[in-house]
Image (cartoon, rainbow, N blue to C red):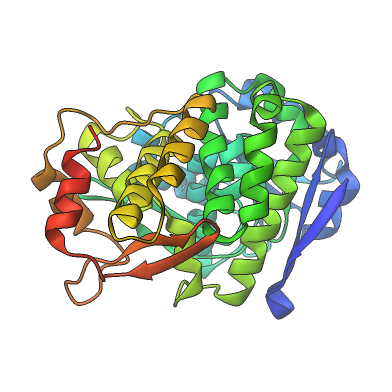
Length: 359
């Protein structure tokens, strides 16, 4: 097991990474303030891992299970209310602990539910997808989607712990695994060029799910994210670089219908569009863009935007973005490989050309 710390003063918490961690009850028991525990999972993950997690909890714990439908299309207020109904019916109090057992949707919804229930209760992240392990489970961003925009309703609410059991990746479908690699590649692009070069050299082994390489990639991704979150917890500045490709990607997810494109797939195309725009501004070489396209393709990710999306549709949806300030669209772009910047300093015709030629 390797452990990192997200340094947030008295709200700091560990990220434990290793095989078989879900069965190690000694990692969970000290975090429970009371006897009540609510495990939130979904219909896909629960049959695989719910009993394993339950067995790691104290015998005296009163454990409630809430099983949600699986899919991004269910990340909404209606399904969140299912969680609140269950907690209230079981009379869970302020010492309850919610445990998110699943991917990014389960983690985001459980965290938001924990932030809201009785004005804030504890929660623990046990992410079961690669994307959730390297990204969404760390940093305290929680929320749900709205038909007009992704993740527009939510709260910052930090977990007590992130428990990353790398063994669960054995059952992850290939498409979901590739989606997670998009977020891994992101860290190299935004703040860690040596890691980006390492990924170029080791991607084939990662795709083959080499356990040693996977553990290293997860550790280095979490290390980068923990450092950024510690410096800017509520995204007042630096943390926004973690959204490389996300403004383009969220537009794709919203337009296509939540769940049609996986988040990592949309982010992959968005990162390539951001790299292309950076090259058009003279910050990257076209060879850098070609290298990224090749790397994403090797990871099994799409490299072209949906052909049925117009430039106007992109711009309209991108305008509903949390990085928009005073009506000004801001994007995360790359000054160089490993150096991201949040900027509105790009001519609209260049952005339009970038979108038009990404099909």
